Image (cartoon, rainbow, N blue to C red; front, top):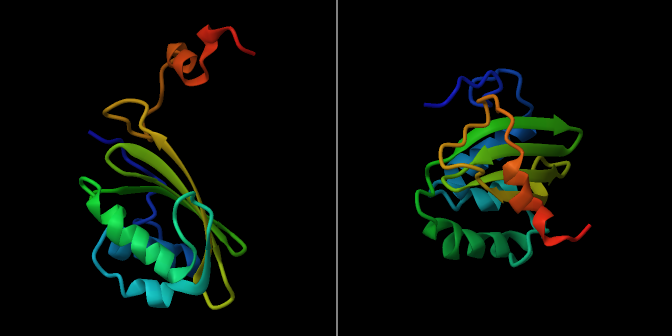
Length: 151
């Protein structure tokens, strides 16, 4: 069972136009079936910083067609939080096996112009970012390889 999320982007009424654009793109294109949104919501000269994905609209389109659409449970995702500052929007989301933070810069036309991301495996099978944690520092030993003797 997931905890209530007071920051749920889908429940907020104060989203900026860029935040709404990013949520629409994620719901209807990245995790949906509407590839036509790439031509309207993504800048023609889109800059991609995720290793392995080519530049521009066509690079993004190829990634979605050849990788994203093949992920198990690709339509099942959860927007956790969204933040906007100037022309930047950060979306924190969950997919079945990973937590993702997408960082997107928008151009003056309100199109997604540049993208970075941070992707991390979920720390536990039933991970819920709204559930408060209990102290258990043991998982950090594996994450940071404390036992190898390196600094």
